[in-house]
Length: 406
Length: 104
Image (cartoon, rainbow over all chains, first blue to last red; front, side, top):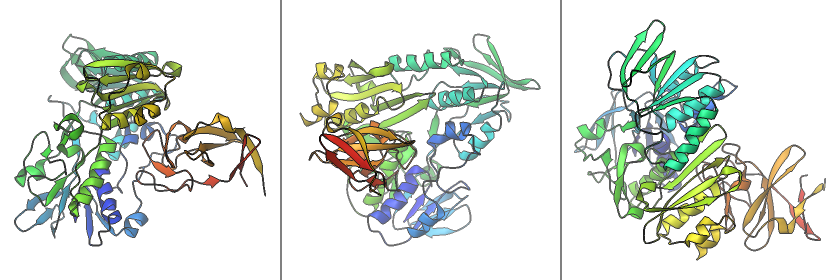
């Protein structure tokens, strides 16, 4: 078994193969020089920790060895010979496979402008995080291009370290993709209170790397000068390997509900693939989410061993900024009406329902983990295609767990 | 040896639920199972030091509110990614409607 990509999905798959009883060789090919590590802390703890930043390893060398997972680091795959079932690596070796998993992830979308220079950076890897961190400090000027999760989490981290932060978002508000406006408003206001300058509805005209800093000129004529510009305008799936191998693409590598590509011996998992979501009638989505990568890795591993399980998960993700945590289960854009549940300390949850009352998503925000339990229960209700009582959803005194049994 | 600490009233914990209990600079999670038995574990998830008391109890499983790491709260056993380190458990007894935890 060969796994290309040693991120969350690929690494999870390697362990899941062993957990399912597979006894043959497992080769895990990773592009980076590090042990497999978790990416969520890169925009948060890796920036703000008082100790020197360190990777949060998914598994250390001893655990990889114990599970007989051969990690090949600093290496990628360049081509797949599907007829002979072998994959060529950048280190020159050809590896034969019975089943192959592509878990190559995503890479930051590049800003299509010339002259960006070395002070315009992106965040994807731990090494990227180290480079960004080395610039952060009291009084330094940080411009963040893109009001999405990466940008806003970095904004919060940079403020914590005393930097002057400006966030530039071309859309009319932050978190336009996938986050309801009421929740985005709370995030926006929190950043404003913390001293972040957020500019929305203004695209970038030019960026110039000058002696006094990176000069960003917006469409409106507004200018922002920064010591570092961090670009966080989304990510694109890494599909070159699949494409050159002739696999079907569709917003990433197209896989079926069992995570199989157009070649039945090759699977894909995580950010690099699009897949049908059963809970939304087979709607094809591509997610860039930590838990989704884990679920994919585990399922792909079992199916590589001949199981024929279909993905039955509900999308879920979270974001932490300052003391706030946001969690979303399901896809809010599936909703046609909204019911609000107010919790203690300003926390609230929006339940997104179809006109026929079916719960399709829930999004919540509040201090700490205030919304976590209800969002998790909502996720279970979504998975069951439940039509919960509207009054019960709105009433915080009613335990959502009681609706699950109904 | 037998340091029994009074933690709370039994009725403070709903059935199939969990609460937080802090004592002497440490934090614990106290559980009441669907079978009306009581259990105690360390209060923080072994993955990222999150209070389990805000998590969800389903049957004999506590699920961390942050990243859904799961443990059997009766045994402390980690039940799959992202957690791989077990939770420490502590003996619990009920006396006159009070919950006591033995820290040892």
